[in-house]
Length: 411
Image (cartoon, rainbow, N blue to C red; front, side):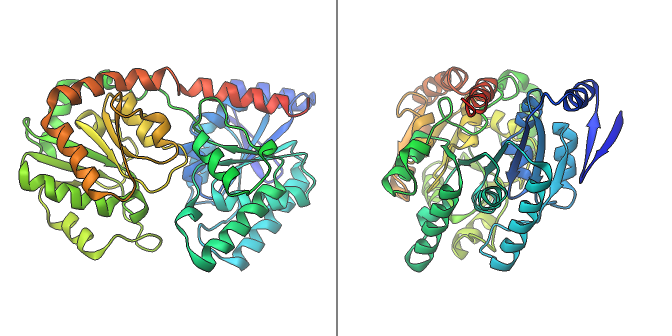
């Protein structure tokens, strides 16, 4: 593999890379810069998207360095990257520094499009892109953390959101529910808003999330290693172990289920974020002491854990368009989700899962109880789950719809 240096970044070249460089020399490709706050969003939440778009645009990825994680994104997506340190907290001095760095990058690179994803990256890059005179300033909304804020913090975050949308030329809520929330809160004109495809920021690769890839023997080996017996029913949660994901309610509901059914296990795939959104002390204690709660931490590949599970519990307070629910559905699991945007678009109550009110421990307990005790209902719902995802959210469909949107911007 050959590499060529261009400005601030390294271009890794294979056959596609040589074609890309030739196109650049002929002036045939417009430049597109994708910005996220942290590299995991660029590399995981948008996995494959940058590489796909590099067939049509000169792509640059921008995010925090993340201890060389950004370099891994560059290698996997085969696109150049530029590190700009951004935080997920309210850090005015660091934010001003990041805006200036982004401004310098945009002035130097002269992109036709800057497209941001995640709240902080959206605010900083939309301000910088407007200052730099970038023609098309696009921001995808994939959840609104501010919805859980109150008082002066909510006022501040509402103001920041309006600034972000004011600097952008187009806003892409990744669900119809988010579209409604943005409109109802009067954050921006409805003329700026558009949902790409059927929703989702990146769709899902249903050939990758496919239960047939895992044999019964493999599932038995993993289950046994985690202390899961063949007659156990496994509830899985995948995501950050934080209050906003409904973990406090999930643990309370599971504790009640365990009093009735001792053969039910709860599999937690994720890590705490104690500095940003900690769990209640008694909930964390229950996780650490309940032998039927199995915590496996962060996993680069969550598919084996879906494959050994019977249903997904995802009682989140807020989402954009949750990948976890799509992944679980593609892996053939019935899902219990809250009645929030994204979740209530992926799941149809009684068809491919169950929908419950937000922050309702009793409703969560009752839904888990029904699906634990009614094997036929659980199997019927699970049998419909995969088709509901493959028909609406296949990844390449989302990419092509976004490409159409890019190509329409100058018309």
